[in-house]
Image (cartoon, rainbow, N blue to C red):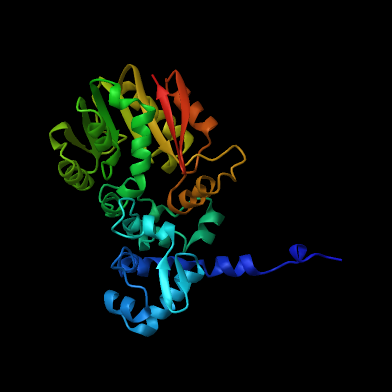
Length: 338
């Protein structure tokens, strides 16, 4: 007799086919600031109150709140709704861990559009040449990234500071490559008043990083270097190079060449802090890191989620003497020493 657990079910199929609805509902709730409206002692709890606060009719508010309850972002008791602990921590603007801005990039038409042609990409083995704008200086996506993604990266930024022992390291000259929002370099300057940063990225992106550095009160120790990370002259004498969420865009040979250039900018004994979604050797775990390979397949010519062994080999071939891994889930910091 076959047990219920062994009976085939189409539930996973339908959950996956309809997954775009989850993204759309969450993005709508974030844009309506629904979670903030429900947070705190003065937060609203019933449909009439919520509808009034977010400026929407009661019918659509009811459907949205019920759906968010079904997928786990709200709790419902009778006619009253409430935030889950996760929603309060990450989706209310009252929380210092607010992640809502990341939806503007992660669920943007540019990112989601990569998957509209995934069948063709898989048949081809890579994206169409016309879609290859990974490192284009005029790609507005990277400005959007810089404005949206800093909150998601803050735990990793503090993790890098800890892995490098920045607080007690004394003077450090830091090169932040593909600085984006600037959070990684900015956190280092906040941890140690003797840190100075050279932030490298496209000029338009660096304006966002500069704004963030000035807002953090470290603008006087934050210098900008505009240009292509593969072509611009870094200079020499750096103690630390930050290579954050960069290598996954490119193939192994490109990364070896790039990391050799990074090594050339460092002092003897200098360190490169590489932040990546690192897959285990089985390439199916941990789930979020391993699944990132599909994101790279859909959006880059040859990118992937590398394993630690692969990143270690890249660093050694590029001239580094050692590489060690430091977990900051869902990502990993690889510290390579020259």
